[in-house]
Length: 218
Image (spheres, rainbow, N blue to C red):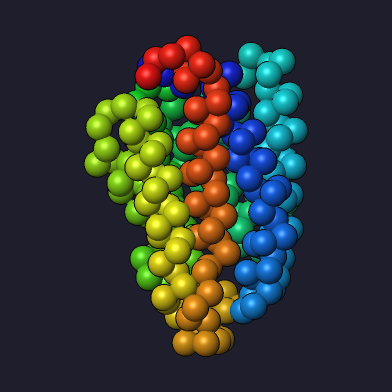
């Protein structure tokens, strides 16, 4: 079982769907203690990603080159830290890849771990700081513990990311504009963590819809 270019396209397009469907919700979350624009930035990322994927379908570009180009385009979106961090996220995914045309389970783990390391290098935020890292770190950690099977990896990452995002409502904000509210921010989920949970949910659902279940492998 591997992730081909076609399957990976399905995965990313499903992420776009979830980003677009939840952009207003993300803005609502962000408006409580932040700038209120996280959903707008996420929607721009989805727009950029969807256009890039649709063009990629007709191009011979490798998965690695595609992710590197996508990273650069996302970083140019603007909209605060979110676009820069998501740019680093996709750049991290690309780092272990070369000219491979397919991603197996072992490579997927390498990609996720590389992504986590890249993010840790550009932000001081860690667990319990009420940021996107509260979803990303547990998602990758649980994915690394999963069996060497793509479905198991994606399921573990999705579950941990969703749980991590939910737990952010128990934390006081330490970064961004919301840090000014400190304990007052307790009770509200962090929008960045929620968007990361949507990303991992989209990757899993996109993989499911990419053809494997239709072929009755399970």
